[in-house]
Amino acid sequence: MISAQITGIVIAVQANYYWVKCDRIQGDLDQGDRNSQSSSALPQATLLCTRRDRLRKMGQKVMVGDRVTVEEINWDSQRAAICQVLPRQTELDRPPVANADQILLVFAFAQPAIDPVQLSRFLVKAETSGIKVQLCLTKCDLVSPDIQQQWRDRLMTWSYDPILISVYQHQGLETLRQRLSDRITVVSGPSGVGKSSLINALLPQLKLRVSSVSGKLERGRHTTRHVELFQLASGGLLADTPGFNQPDLDCAPIALAHCFPEVRSRLQQNSCQFSDCLHRDEPGCGVRGSWERYDLYLKFLDDAIAYQTKLRQQTEPEAILKAKTSANGKINYEMRLDRSKYRRESRKTRQQSMQVMKGKVIDWLEQEPE
Ligand code: GDP
Ligand code: ZN
Image 1: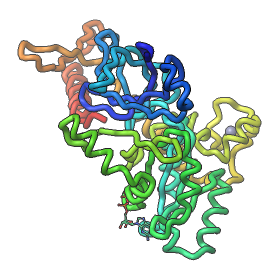
Image 2: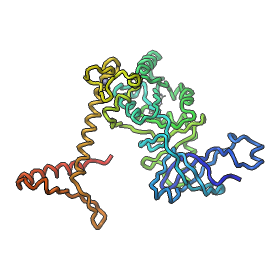
Image 3: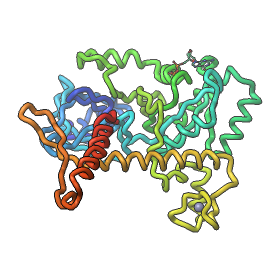
């Protein structure tokens, strides 16, 4: 007999269905199973689950990577219902993955060549998630060992130890597999660097698994933001959908320095005495200056400040707008008129202010949603 509830991990989500890979079952096996095999040798079942109504009413969403408890298990039809989502350790938005342990950032030595500014932008974006970042440089078959070594040395000064890969020459894949084992990994990087080739090399069973899942759900796999976790032979899980291709630096200016690991260690040693320092021209700042990416840091800081300013301006119109839902369900926005504010203004000034406000509102409404 197997107990009524078991735990597992959500490996795919489509519409209101969740594929849950069950943990290896340790207890409550019948005597025959207990005698014949250790629990780790038992196969891990995958169940097609719905979400209990109670979770839906609570607004509890279920993401790929979530650890969950399932009940009402029907082993014959491989169906069950998720009754609990365990607390998340991490949560990524793009791709939507819970509990990712690391981001594997992929760049190529050549075709396209490494651009240190673009590389740093991706690195910083990945670091803003707070999740560990692994860097991987592909296509090493296209450059000399000297160039490979120069880049490795340079990146070590940025506090990254890159894995050098050639999918064509099967180089570096073993080291990569070791770094991916027993972890949930999300791949990221610009297009053309070899991410798909790398994922295919790591997951030769991908096509097989994809067709079985899509077949049962009778839906195409590549719906927007669809993501699925695939089991690596080494025990880890890899998200098949790469994340952020064009990263925006949406980091708070004050947090930016923490996204540079070569500075993080200095900050931990309190080398800057000011807790709110932006490490620009503040006198007595111990972080400013002596590291390769400092000028890049200043450039990104300007971007981050500009982003924050834009964000503030965008949220402002909300204060002067009132949303009204019409009979056909469409939302209209109306000016929120604070009469006391305009009481003493002449009619002309009032009209001018209204024009300015309308302009702001139109700008705001025309902005593409994120
Ligand atoms: P993605 O856009 O990041 O998913 O990149 P792809 O996997 O589609 O690869 C882009 C191009 O790089 C393709 O033409 C691949 O054949 C090529 N490529 C991938 N890996 C390697 C490699 O290890 N060495 C070389 N020379 N080319 C590679
Ligand atoms: Zn400082």
